Image (cartoon, rainbow, N blue to C red; front, side, top):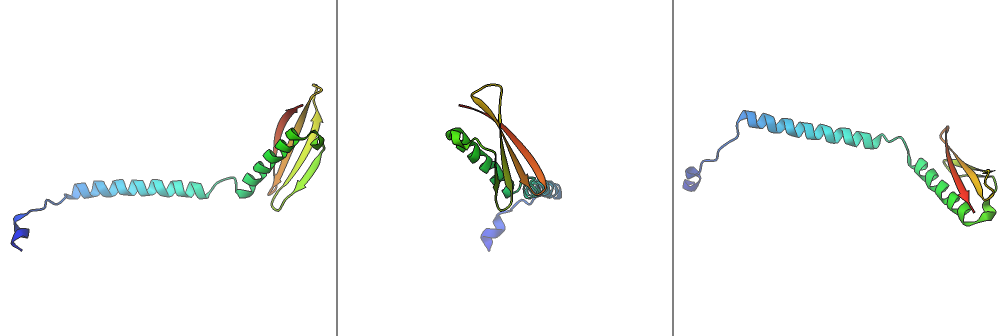
Length: 114
């Protein structure tokens, strides 16, 4: 007990405590806002799957010339319509992918050259 009486620990003032609590509160509120923004994204998982499927279909068309047909693809939560149009250039085609997802339509246009 004698050893404890020799050492004096300096405490923090009320001003320092208020400043520290303010900094902590600001950090927590910024973290909560960022977390809420992540939870409230505009594109859900089905939207990402649809975009990936369009990339796969485009790759198939680029790889195989026989895939130059209008087609409709139906999946669980979305559908993709593929429309092929001939361009002025003889060797190129305009491909339009229409994604239908939850009453929304998105169109992706691509030019493929052979």
